[in-house]
Amino acid sequence: MPLRAVIFDYGLVLSGPPEPDARARLLKISGLSPEIFDAHYWKYRLDYDCGTLNGHTYWPTIARDTGVSLSPEQIEALIEQDVLLWATVDPIMLAWVDRVRASGMKIAILSNMGEDLLAYMRDNFRWLDRFHHLTWSCELNLIKPMAAIYEHTLEQLNVRADEALFLDDRAENVEGARHVGLHALVFRSPQTLQTDLEREGWASQLPPVLACGSRG
Image 1 (cartoon, rainbow, N blue to C red):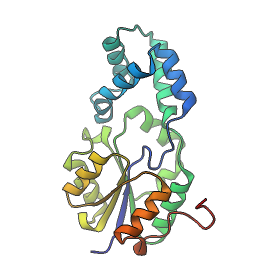
Image 2: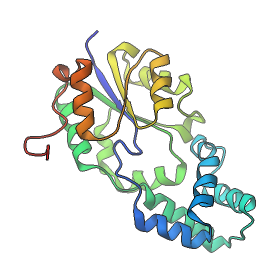
Image 3: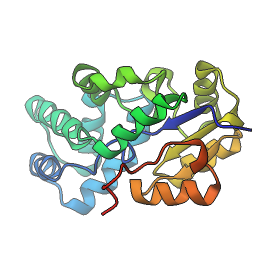
Image 4: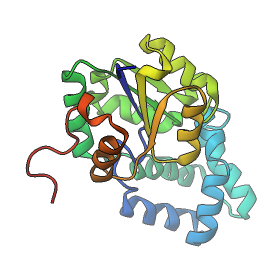
């Protein structure tokens, strides 16, 4: 079945790596060691992405678990720096998004996303308008790898599962996509994506990930 759509995760696919200065400020504000911070940051992250928590409940939950005290001002600062942690984008991937759309493919984002980062993106990322559909977990109270969130995206794009390719940096989300019939790849970098597309036989249906002169 020919491909008709490409569905992108946001974090570490369209976004760049976590911003180091923002991470340093998160550690300083929280007063936690990197190891303790990371363990509790991810412990409740899916609850944040699902909309069960927001910034004003997520950070107090972490504070409770770690025994630290956070003022309202510190919580606001943590929300701000957490947004900035994920607010850089990969220009190579955004350029490929444009080429994929220009080739006639439908394009969408399907991302586990908390409401605070989403609000920032809507205010600052005009390139979101390029997509035919945007699926954000916090708005549906669903998260990857739940089958329903993939099915929702396919329905909104009006394509069959076997007509779409899904890209995500997390293996469990890729397996969830495959479970509902999507073609799916674990994304590692633009360079390895091109290699993976060629290996799987999809490169002939899609424009090159890397523009001329960008392989170095």
